[in-house]
Structure formats: structure tokens, C-alpha cells
Length: 103
Image 1 (cartoon, helix red, strand yellow):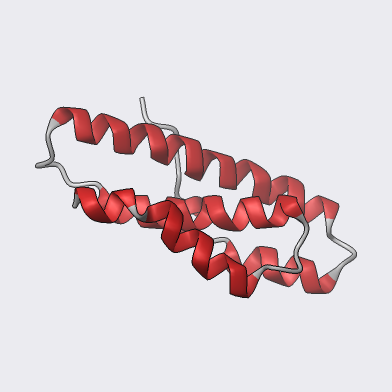
Image 2 (spheres, rainbow, N blue to C red; image 1 turned 90 degrees about the vertical axis):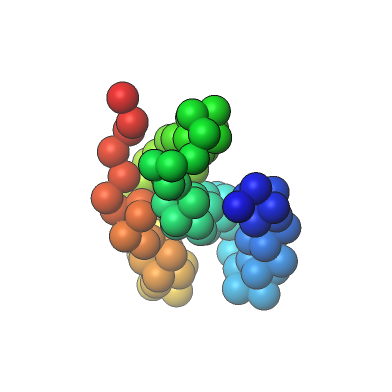
């Protein structure tokens, strides 16, 4: 579990190079955050040690919360650019959509 968590940035960086190289920086950041959010949702397990659960919760708040806020902003900013708007919508996933800040 820990090993897969450590390689998260490498995984998303390499996959983003192919899919968003021509996107503006703000869209690239959103896609990274949305992907990290989706990945982290699958990492959480109630049987993990408390410290690991807290770290994952903190990262979920960072990446999922960031992506959710970015989505609203980017949809408005790029509403007249169908190509970029499609890219934004295609990367908005269930994990971002269902995110609520942890208590």
C-alpha cells in the first residue's frame, strides 16, 4: 500500500504528459488534482493505522477539494472554448463530485 502511494506523483506525471501537454497550466493542475483525488479514494481503508488514515484524509482534502474548486472556476473561464471545456469535463470524476471536506 505504501509503495503505491509513494509512486502517485510519478504515475500521474507520466500519464499527463500524453493527454494534456497542450493544455493551459491551470487545466493541467486540475487534471492532476482530479486524478490524485480518484486514486486516493481507493487508498483509504478503515483498517489502516491511524497516522496513515490521517495522512490520506489530509491529501484527499487537498486534492479533491482543490479539484472541486478548480472545476467551477475552469468551467466558467473556458466556457467559450469547447475543446478545453470537454477536456475539463472528461476529467471531472465521481471522487471529485462526491467530495465533502472531512471533519
